[in-house]
Image (tube, rainbow, N blue to C red; front, top):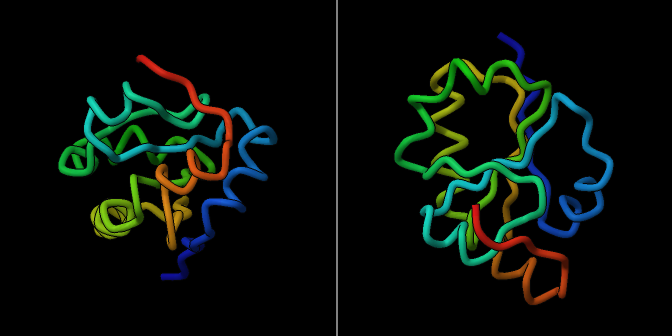
Length: 111
């Protein structure tokens, strides 16, 4: 089975955020508390340990950019979703929300 899953870095994600189509989403897999403290504008939050339960819903997207605080939870969530058969994933590796904030990129707070 051919997969289209891939990876990008946080700076590449920043370049794509404003161009996302209606069937694309940034999935933040940090805790709800971390998400409320600051997240990528327009992103959705499903904590890493819950992503597998949402696999069926997430299959409806054309592309999902999976990210977290530093990259580790994103990789774990990516693997969890791959095991559920998703082929629409892009893992944000080599950094995460900490690097997004350090770069001075826009964030939203709250839900």
